[in-house]
Image (cartoon, rainbow, N blue to C red; front, side):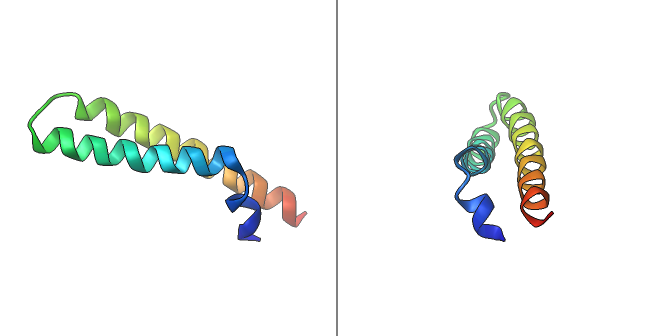
Length: 63
């Protein structure tokens, strides 16, 4: 079941990009720079799209 999402390159890249964006946002916030807000919004958007794609793949495989 989960293997379907793990072998999908687009889903894994967007999950990874979301995590990297969150790390960048934390580093920017720690240095008191204003760019962290952009990276948080971008990371949340990527995460939402990734979850939607993974859910669609999971439902497509099970039906």
